[in-house]
Image (cartoon, rainbow, N blue to C red):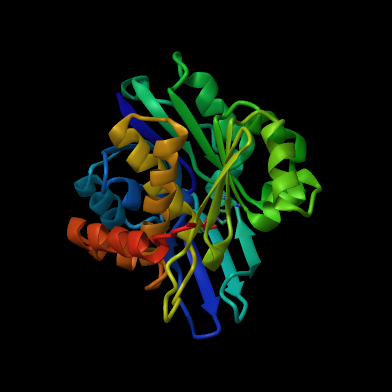
Length: 306
Ligand code: AMP
C-alpha cells in the first residue's frame, strides 16, 4: 500500500523584495516529495525535460522516491515558472508560465503503483490529475487535490470535473473566493463542499489554514517567523506534510486531519526559510519534532470559565 504523488517538477525563477534566484529546481511534486518522505516513501508521477539535473533525480531516489512514473523527454525542456512576491510575501504575481513538457503530458501509472492507497494530486493540469485517478483500478482510500488560480482562469470546466472526484481539496483564500464566487470563506467552503470534496483546506499564508468538513471547522496557525525568505512551495510542502502524516497513520478521520494540518503547517514553516527546496533537504526528524512542539505551545492555553 503506498502514497502516490502527481505534480509538476520544474525550474523556477523567484524574485522577492529581498533577493532573486537564478533558475532553481522546483515544482509542486518536487516539494511534496521532499516533505512527504519524512513520513513515508513516495511513488512519483511527473515529467521533466532533458535539462532537468540528473543529480536532482538521484537525490530524490536516495530519499525514498520511486521515479518509475517520472517521464524524461530528452529532447524537450522542463516546465518553467517565474514569480515575483509582493512586500507582504503573502501575495505574488506569476511572471512566466512555460508549460514545455507539461503541454502534452500523458501520465502513465506504472503497474507497481496500482497498490496506491493515498493519492496526492499536486498542482497540475486538471485533466492530467483526473487521468491518474481513472488509471487506478481500485479507488485509493483518500484522494487529496491541490490546484491554483491558473486552472480556474484557463480551464474551469475541466477543473470542476476533477474536483468532483476527490476527497480533500486544498486552495488558498483568494482561490476559494474565485472558485466559489463567495467572499465569506465560510460561504465559500459550503459552496465548494457541494462540488464534491468531503473536506476542504483553505490556506491563508502567514495567517494559517482552515479545515472544513460538514458543519465543522478547525483552524491551524502559521508559525510567526521573523524572516520569510522565499514562500515558493510552502503550499506544496504543506500538502506533503498533510498527506505524509495521513499515509503514515492510515487514519482519515477529521480528528487526525487536524493533526495533519498542524504537521503540514510545521513543515511549511521550514520551507520558507531558504530559497527553493534547500531547507527541506537539511532538516532532521528532531527539527520536525521540535517545530511541531512550538506549534503546540503557540496555540495552547488554559481557560477557567467559573
Ligand atoms: P506554491 O508556492 O506551493 O503555490 O507552489 C509553487 C510551485 O508550483 C513552483 O515550484 C512551481 O514550479 C509550481 N507551479 C507554478 N505554477 C504551476 C502550474 N500552472 N502548474 C503546475 N505547477 C506550477
